[in-house]
Image (tube, rainbow, N blue to C red; front, side, top):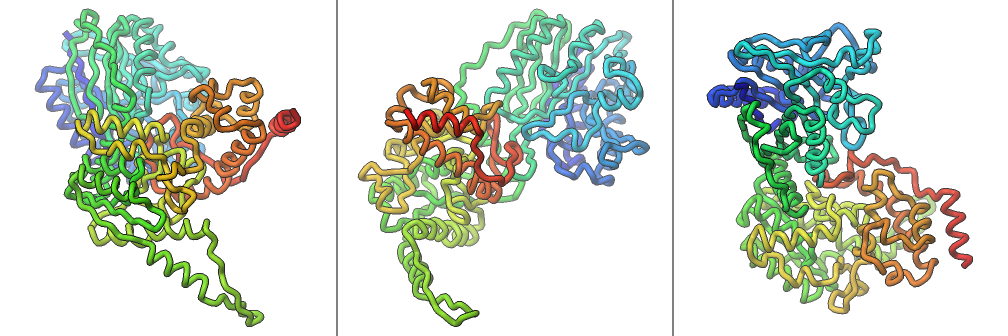
Length: 629
């Protein structure tokens, strides 16, 4: 009876030596458990998100060398693994050496060649070139190779015949995107389906995105059911990035039987190896569908991502500026679980505009966490800065005339934010021996509701892919499920969100941020996360039809509540669109790396240019029509 092991390993990007050691360890474990086949993830040797490290020939040679170590370790066991394959005699379209994203199979120290492939490995067919993926920048696809050879992908894409203990098995080998062909003109799975296979294997390097696993179970379950054979999906765990955006890889490797049932799922964010007897899978009971709420998955992604990010940069201590607001409170509760309260310093930095309410809530939060805490008032420093700016003469060296700067109330707000981050938190972090965080949420990041070199500063923006409503949900989840007690004070959850930078943001009077989160969270989300992104034209069409809330997914009645007239609605829409496509882009470019959890995170995932706001002709027509009514 054929026994197949799925090896869910942590892949460390750019470190083939570390990854190969993990692979060799898992091969021994699989062999000890009686496995005939052991499957590793896509790009298990080099990692996946490597930027332009792929252009280093020395690195490519190293990956090949470590690949040979894995092949040599395949005595009496079939090893399936992902690695970069290099044809040193050919070139990519960019003139650099030819590279393939490849699926290798080794047995008894030799590679097993796919039936019709010109190389002793399977080449990835479908190259994702959207969101965070940039495969065509570095890799040559099977489709391109087929054109080069004067044939078709269907002629090259072929099963691999395995000879194990006197039996022959035919395996359909796919690499990640090859199983997600709905939007491509070519479907590798369907071509292989004609080959009378014994099982499929999909090796993946698939970043976590909220809701992706449910969709994958539907898609891959259907594929296994229609083909009538089992499918093994093996994903990695770990943390990889493309500079501006940091992605967690959750694993969740899954075995589907020939009925399309999920019969084995490996845990999120844990290395694991499981062995399944191929012939018994059809009789295995289907695993129950998870009833966990989305926020539980988000918490695990954030906790794991923060922990591995800190480990990668060798940072053990954290400083967080806390205001008595929800974002900094949730950040504090998160980091306390990762580094421990003894390694967490919370700093409250009140000015004359901070109420006794928020100062008290900050103290309560620190008490609940049992962490390090300090209060550093900033008013004296802010007043000193304003005084220096206003009283220091500004000399025109051409004419000799002198003038003085005037600090407006708006500029004074920014001075407060910069004083807190650039002076206090940066200094405290250096003295404490750690780094300080950026606590921005996704709504603020969308419209640049932050201060450059102020509250936008930090080493990581762990919450910047969460909308405000998700930050609140995370507060409740951590209180209820993670800590089992009230850590984030209910008062912080209940208080109106406010930056408290002026008397116009007095929380005791119910005054807060200009962003109306119950509505704007969803409006901003439509700008970013809809696959067909919304623009002001779309939003005005919805307004005219009376379907704004339906299309945005927010609570009914909010439009009339916040915007009594069409002029009010349009003024608000244009205010935020101008910021979203204007100054906010410059701020996002300078923002810290963002930990991704959504289907579209800022950074390398959501690529943007500084072109300024634009309104379509149809938008201008709709605007004139609505204002004339």
